Image 1 (cartoon, rainbow, N blue to C red):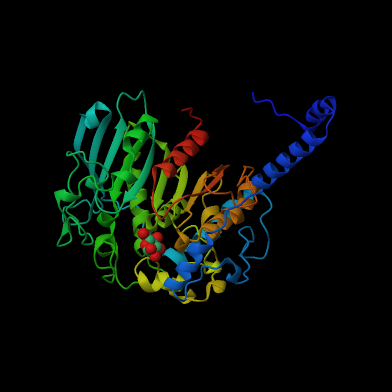
Image 2: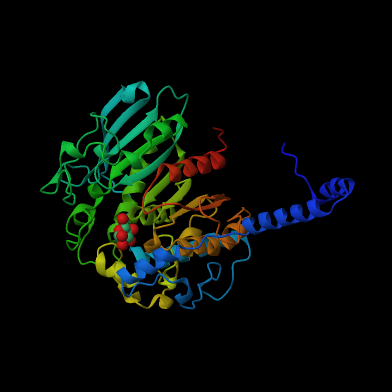
Length: 455
Ligand code: GCU
């Protein structure tokens, strides 16, 4: 144990030495330490200045954030307030319904005819470190309907079922590792380097590996399961004709019909349906995770499906962990205009009218309660409003406390690179919009803590 020298000890030494100077110096050092502890994160003023110049009309100045009042997550629609954990499920159902109606839309249930086909099973993958499985999930049970390929890596030699991280990827399973055994995606994707006519080529194999530190995840005893989000619903606005909407929707679309984020979140639940059938995975210990638009998706997936044991949002921002009412960085209006297919029709009513929303994003985080939830921000990613993400966690805290768990173990936003981990976890790390190894290390520690595992 470290020996902490206290002031009286120092005073004795100082008196013996016949001088008070040492005492004064020690007191000053303690004062500095206290100040450091009270330190909090602030956006870099140079970055604020340059972004404000570059993106006219976007709010980056903390001093200009409008006054707002958040809806109380514990206030029932009938005017009463939840004061007993037993009343929470009823309030939870109300909040879930509000998000379905006004934000993400209503998704169907599990399709009866869905099938799982394990088309690859490799024992000695990744130089003998992993077992690889690939599974075709046919949502409608037929070849002409949408198909999601789930890629699963398990640590080799595991004794019994292992906990897992489940996340969607942006550009195909074959991008998460250079492993030549991963099936090359044949789905539509945005053209970019190595993607020709909206189809992936071999050139993109392994190109997202930095965001998927698979050797580290496996070494820590976890499985990794991932699928390409475009297998569920291609990320472009086509009037909801393609992907699972086209295959499962019947008739006219209502203003609360599911849009793309709801479809991707629904796809994560279908991936979990498969994992529940896989004996090598402990389906009761699956953490759902996502970056950016897929972070919004992970939060919604974890909110609607309580089978997810841990929910993790990486730089999810507007429509994810960030409070809409702050209108800082990306706003409701901006996101609805740039990505009209992400949220349901009703969400458009709140363009520049965030105050009219019956929910804010702290209530999305509260929907994970009492399960562990982690929100991560990045210092340079002001578009996603790091402070708004922290404040969301803080405003979800009363729900966690009501349910008898530790919520967020701090009142003030922690300084850079200083994660806090209660039942709610939070960090703001150095760097930009990305899913980094640093982020992963915190998620692994957080999962270890809540799953009762040691490194
Ligand atoms: C855009 C969008 C964000 C989103 C991000 C991403 O920046 O405005 O809301 O999170 O794309 O998914 O990368």
